[in-house]
Amino acid sequence: AYRGLKDQAAGLFPITMLGSKRVLKGHVKKVTCLAWKDHDGPPTLAGADQNHKVILWDATTAMKKQNYTSAFVMAVDVHPTRDLVIVGTMQNVCAIVDMTPSLPEGTRTRDLQGHDGYIGSVKFIEQGAKVVSTGGDAEVKLWDAERGQEIATLYGHTADAGPISFPAGDKSGQVFCTGSVDKTVKMWDLRQSACVMTF
Image (tube, rainbow, N blue to C red; front, side):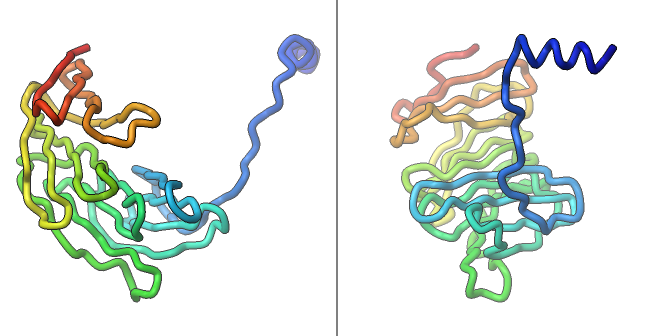
């Protein structure tokens, strides 16, 4: 009976099943977060797992470019033009890590400290010159990535702030949305340093 229904469904919905294109191996425990970069050069993927490993991959060849050890990683993002990764942790810190393949291992170069809660999400903006982060302190922060200094804190969420999303194709990085445990999505405009809409 099941096979008959399956054949009937295949006739009604002739959809080709998705297949695995490439498998990137190296993580030995649950992968907690991913980030993708395909602006310049070959596409690059960064993943962090519960075994305290952050791995940078060449997504075309499925080869590891570099790895870095960090505990309790909650968020990761890849620099748009360089082999840099930013890692957000349960220790309330965003760490910028040099993942140049020629290094023996990824090297922590700068810490962005200021959140009073775990890091919910991190994103490079403005071609990697700045970083946006959210945290368990309900705050959204803008950072100077080169100096490691906080530029602004955006207030509005009333509970843990999490995912960050930018409009597709928007290169400016000035407008973005954040989600929160407070059951809202807020749209921010960095030109006004303010929330311009709440959903």
